[in-house]
Amino acid sequence: MLTFIIPVRHPENAKDWRRVKRTLEQTAASIANQDSNEWRAVVVANTGSDLPALPARFTVAWVDFAPNPVHDIGRDTSQWGDRFEAFRYDKGHRVLAGLLHDPGADHYMVVDDDDFVSSRLASFVARHPQAHGWYFGKGYVWTEGGRWIFRHSKLHKACGTTHIVRRDLMKIPATAAEAPLAHVRWLGTHARVTEDFVAAGTPLAPLPFPGAVYRVGHGNAHSQSGTVRHMFFLRRGMLVRPHVLATNLLRLRLLSPAQIEEFGMARAGAVPGIAQEGAVSVALR
Image 1 (tube, rainbow, N blue to C red):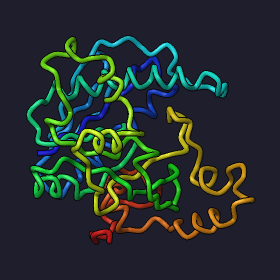
Image 2 (image 1 turned 45 degrees about the vertical axis):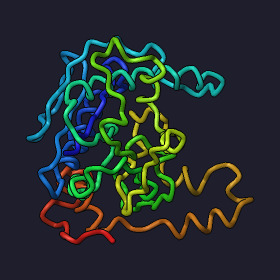
Image 3 (image 1 turned 135 degrees about the horizontal axis):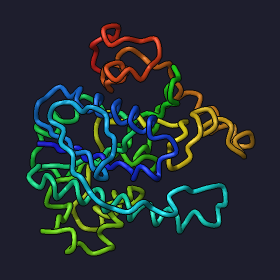
């Protein structure tokens, strides 16, 4: 059984709560698009938060965490380190609450509340119940509302929706109070997760197919991610690295009906002008 954990920020840390609700609803629809029933999902949210209607197999872990006073990163890069640290601890506490809410899964996956996941994850995990877990090197980056998608070769270094980990390796404490702060911080980050498991002697395997779509270019993104165009084609220094620009161009594709179907984007109503019944049920190769 795979449990998806979706940590949701404090409402006071949202620039536009209506947009948070909309993207969360779309992410939940994507998760519910699994081709197997071997999954559950836990949304972690502050008590009193106005959440959208959630699909079957979803539960809510209500928490009473204070808002993060330095949630917004801003443009002053000299303060990014401290603010990202505060974000990691806040997210880590929310992930821990999700783990404690559903401690009986075989594997867990943290999903950011604005991303999309492959419909094949739950069935794949069910076929490999003893595996340490997987990281998503293969995946996609998509600008909200766009028709182009970028195939990323190291998505686990850019996006938080990129790891599935076996329960015992998550080191779930009996209570939140017993969790060391270092572990809470670890639960709230993703950049070095693969290296940490290699060092521990329990390496994660690369997922053999693209596992997630990283949604970028919307106002509530904490990382202040730009559009696909700005992230991979218009960045400073790109013109003096033509080989990188050429490689990135080869990774750019029109969003296909198969991708829209597999990642539940039509079901979620995330792609303008494409209804769910218009998506083609073809497995992505």
